[in-house]
Amino acid sequence: MEVIITYRHIESSPGLQTHVETKLEKLKKFFIRPIKIHVIFNVENSRHVAEITLSEDHNAFTSKDDGHDMYHCLDRAIDKMEVQLRKHKEKVKNHHGKGLKT
Image 1 (cartoon, rainbow, N blue to C red):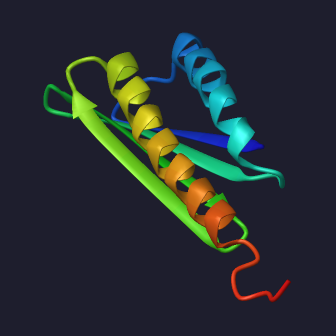
Image 2 (tube, rainbow, N blue to C red):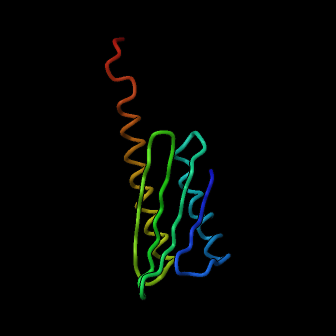
């Protein structure tokens, strides 16, 4: 899993980076192949924005959240991503082997 972290209008923080790495560990269970995750932290006025883009083979997933606390925004964005990935995994799992005669 390749993780790229981009900071816009905010200083990089080792605490934020370790928080990202620990929280993204729970997304590993949805994938077999290595994936690429791009996390973007942005500050606009007093609004903090956390955006996550996840790329795997031919699929791309995006989640975004904003608020007053960057850590809380990241947690909610990861939760949104987890919901998307769970739906996708169920969709692939349920459609596997459809149309085959037994």
